[in-house]
Length: 100
Image 1 (cartoon, rainbow, N blue to C red):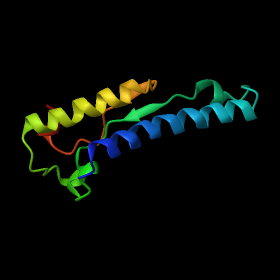
Image 2 (image 1 turned 60 degrees about the vertical axis):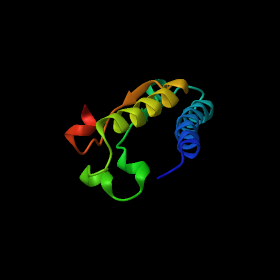
Image 3 (image 1 turned 120 degrees about the vertical axis):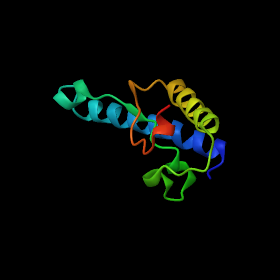
Image 4 (image 1 turned 90 degrees about the vertical axis):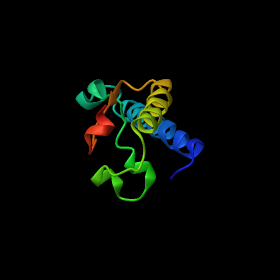
């Protein structure tokens, strides 16, 4: 499993890189491109299994309690929300326990 500080850094970097890409696109097109005007950053919550790097993002078999899964996602949401994306996207949740 990825260490918390490594995961936090990747989450923050993802939002920053997406914001920077939009900014650069707007600058290159003087803000006139329809994509520039409508572009937004969605921070993906994704599945816990993605950070476990063991294929469990496809099976949902994490070997963790619902409380542990909840703590993981709560922390991830807090980190991503702190970077101020336009949206949080809750997606690729492979099992009912992770949706609770």
